[in-house]
Image (cartoon, rainbow, N blue to C red; front, side, top):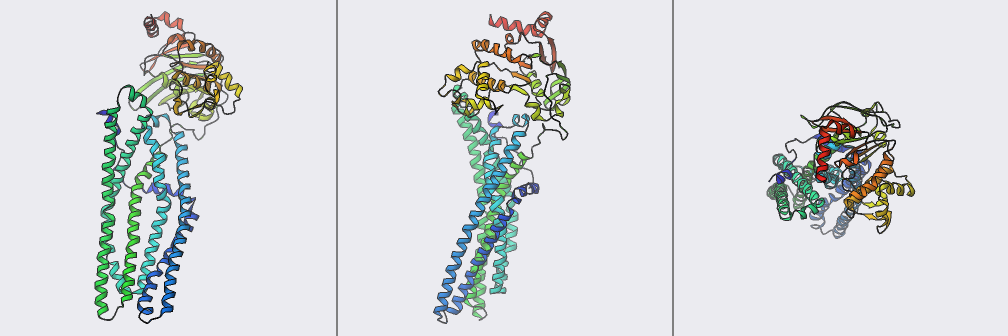
Length: 593
């Protein structure tokens, strides 16, 4: 089924490990480098203290016990206890320090991700499921933060620990230390062999989790539609299929991971066996003591522990590199609609709008607008009509510069919109889309969204103008009524009226209404029309409406089709032409009749 295949599409897996991602990550680490160095020093001291244990044991076996030195034996026992206590205290200090660093790194990355997502153009959100974006901000950041803090510290610490173990082994006995070292080349070959298998396995896990999250998020949002069309069973099958993909890829990745520690453990056991065999031969010759053999055996066990730990860290590192790549892919997404380096502030807008041979396409080779040109004088009300998908919404989106034109110019008051800052342009425009989005919070918060410094009187005035005041006052807490995510407690018409009030409150120089009354009943729309007429007076406005009766009084009506404007004029002029607009208008009258 096509729907299943849509969600089973994976992101690229064939990219090689990119050191650039680690270099980018280093920017988040530098800020906390002093604390990380302090944690590293604490850990190094803890490791050095702990390594005194085998030497203390050797002294007890070779000297204190055979010679009956009870006082010396009690001293050595006290030293062993002290070593353990000091190691625990230092480990707790280090843990507390690194938890703070880890959480701060999570905060910094997540803050930058969200800020970048706010700047990305509409095109970015058009091209990918929102669930896949969400999982990067929440799950992936949590996963990589420990790698960027504890992971890096631990791998350095384990290296230091390994060096210290080698030094202590050499102090005890050089000859037997070399036996331990013989397993290192074997281990290196083994780790090299398994590296790429692990990376690709965890990248697949990342992709499958992303697919599952995208489908889950969409189905939560569309739960009502699912029930309306009785799609529960089919959706459950698709979800089970995606979950099964997650399970299979996870199990495969775990199997790859589980090859590491048994491999290292097997090498470690072989080396320790060699120590005892070789040590007992030399003990029989009188050149080695039992204490030396026990001490080297203990150090051998410790020698492989940091290597096993580094193997686990390396596993974790590979797992999280897939997530790190996705995070920095998102941070690396180009902000294609952004301020030019020499962008200037848009002066107070009078409202003249011009298109000069504008061409635009959402996808290469599929042109939506082709050399569109028109001029709108300040204060004019302009209606855009035409078939669905002709490019009406695209035209108003280009006025607000939500997309960049492929060629040509969009001018406001004679100034190219690409030459001014986005904030100074959009802050003077009021845009009401067909999809009226309501945020979690109070109704008052939603109306205030575009003008945070508005007074209560201004809020009520805007609500009255769009006929929203009466139903708002009828709610439990009036303007302070809490509305849930996406305004789930409100009807579509109520959501649209609140969005209308939000737009009106911002007092824009240019007003854009894209199917702004599509969900409002006819009676409310008639009452709203008076407020609209008052609001449109003296300001440039662009209206998109399928109910043509609502745009009869516009100063200019443009019929959009075939990538351009096929007709333009007043209602009377276009009706007299008996062209596309005439046929559309009369067909609507016939439908009503």
